[in-house]
Image 1 (cartoon, rainbow, N blue to C red):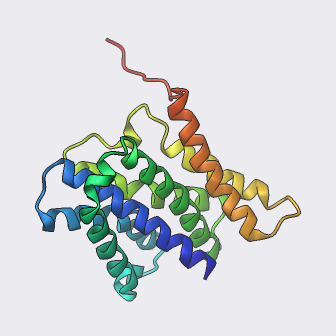
Image 2 (cartoon, rainbow, N blue to C red):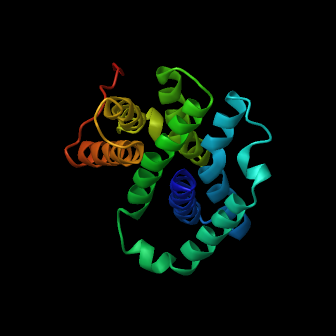
Length: 201
């Protein structure tokens, strides 16, 4: 139940971030739903295909479609309030990657994969919904820009395995890793920490 709750919360966060991007692009309601849907389930779909967990989870459980639909309706009705929060998209995106990183790690652990593969799955789960969203909306994906994104996911996933060596219960390690991911991304943006750009004029 704990892991399902985290998964649902991540789905909501990413669906809302998808709605905000789609509405900025002035898409119609169908376009808004599609962008929200691929943002919320894109990374998880790729993850499930890679580990052979098919049919993918949202095809076996209607809960995810209903959650995305509910998030779209909520965001559409309260879009004026959300627009007043200048960093709303960034906030929901950051919460989403924190939650989905650990969902991916947990899936990797359940599949008996090595820690490095679990970290990779966590990063894929967290990042590729946003990649698909940005490509469909004709934007350069955030993961490919200087802004810290995938790096935060990797650090959060690594911290989870470090926490496993501490005398704390698994759920605390899980939540701690989520907070590491979110905190690192927030601090990176606040203090303008970024990976070096290799472009040379």
